[in-house]
Length: 224
Ligand code: SAM
Image 1 (cartoon, rainbow, N blue to C red):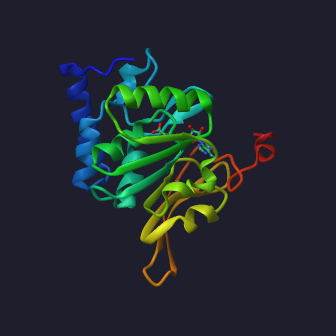
Image 2: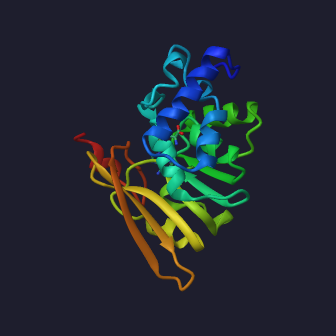
C-alpha cells in the first residue's frame, strides 16, 4: 500500500472532485475531503491505478470500497459538522471513515470481518486518522458511545435497524440504504427534537448486504 501522492494521482483526484460536482454533489466540506483523502491508499496494489475512477472496487472478503459518488452522496445526506459524533457501520477499507475524519468529525466505525477490521485499523493508524474502530455486528450499533449526531450504514439493510434509531441523539440523522438484495433506496431518518422520526427517501443504489442481528441473516444470503 502506498499513501504517497504523485502529481499524476493528485491530478486524477482533482478530476474526480470535478466529476462529483458535475453529478450534483454540492457540499464544499464533502468535496474538499474527497480532494484530500488518497483513495489509492485504501486499495490493494494493482488497483491503485483505478482509484480515481468513479466506480466501486473489490476489497478482501468479497466486499467493496463504495463508488466515490456513493460516498459523497451518503456523506452529504449525513450533514455532519466538525466535532459531531458519527457512527459508521461497515468500515470496509476505511476510506469512508477517513473522509469523515478529514471533515473534522469524531468517527466510530464497526466492521464484521476480522481481516478487513485489522487492515483498516492498521491503514488508518498509519495515516494518523484517529477513527475509533471495532470488530462486531454493527447492526446493533455501539451503545457505549451513544448517542450519535449521525449514523451512516454503508451496507444494504432490509429495514431501518431499530438499535441504530435508538442510538440517535435528538436532531440526529441515520442514513441507510433500505431494500432487497438487488436494489435499495437511500433513506434518511431524522430524530426530531420532539422524538418523532422524520423519514425521507432518496435515489436507488446497490450495496453489499448488512449481515447481522438487525440486518440480513446469513441464511437469507445462501441462495445469492
Ligand atoms: N465504508 C466502506 C469503505 O469505505 O470502504 C465500504 C463498505 S462495504 C460497501 C460494506 C461493509 O459492511 C463490508 O466491509 C461488510 O463486511 C460490512 N458489514 C456488513 N454487515 C455488517 C455488520 N453487521 N456490521 C459491521 N459491518 C458489516
